[in-house]
Image (cartoon, rainbow, N blue to C red; front, side, top):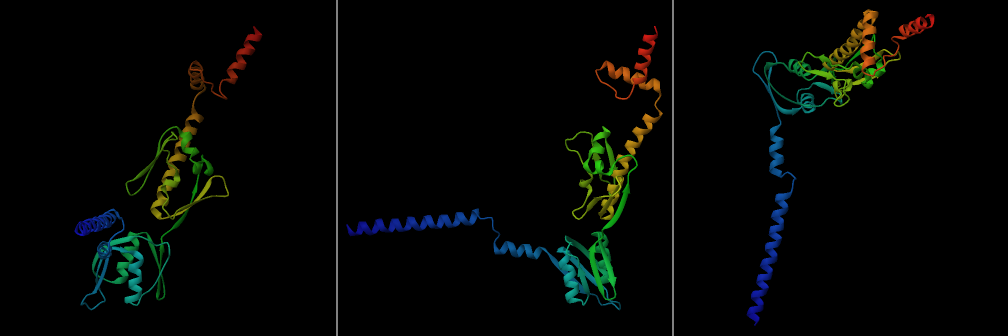
Length: 270
């Protein structure tokens, strides 16, 4: 009897241990937290290697792989006695390979690639986003309606603004999927409404400012075309268009009032 109790107790203990082990394994498998090995692999994926070459002038071999821009600038300041002041808006990662190049030349190329501005003041290099300011003047569209997308909607047709990079932004008359000027801004870009009703001021990277300028010209130019057509259309064409619209049940405001008054006057004369 005692032997039977001991055997049953052992089975219960083994069963409890098995459940605990299964829960532990299941918890480890279901966990989304990265392991220490995965963290180490991730950290090794980003690397910065700068080697001084055996040349008369201070030239270097630079290997960057998924390296943070801030980390690269910090390394230059710490290990190579360079006074670098980095704007807190500078962000991003870089993968590049340079050889037989000075550190200053490498900085210039990286700055050009990532839209950064290097300001050298004596022994200090200031790194900040290369943001420019552009004032855009409209001839036929109000600045407020342009910013609200109303000008693009009133066109009833598509206006496309191209860019040097081969991309474009299309504005359609339909409200669904309507692109606005704000879609062309970068994360740091801003647009301000001017004191005059036909002015806006754009602050952004040069490429983004150019796209917005092209977009504004396309919208304003399309409105200019409509105004030109209305200015030089003949009275006969207006009357014909009025008759066609009247047959379809539409009313063309401001057109045909003269003809109706002349009809009534002729009727009264008769």
